[in-house]
Length: 122
Image (cartoon, rainbow, N blue to C red):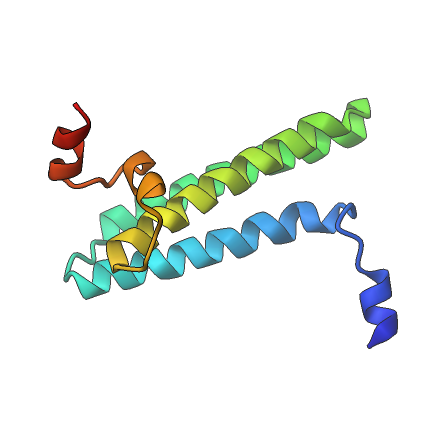
């Protein structure tokens, strides 16, 4: 076990795929559960969402190709950070819709705010 933990390096290129894929899986699960809970399951919305996930994976692949073709690591890491950030925001929105406790300052920044909160800020 100690040897396995010793060999895990977060700077390894494998983590460039593992971290976003894990976040995407969590986003898909929470989004599907939210749709199921609200009786809003729609195959067209699921196709659109999965299409966006495929596009995000293409961003990562382009970043990896830039790293190996040009030797520019920052492009790859920048794209991975961007995709991970989008997934974290989407997870926060899904958790907010599901009723998970989220700090008020974060709720005000999310796209799925209630109209009452929008009116209070204006």
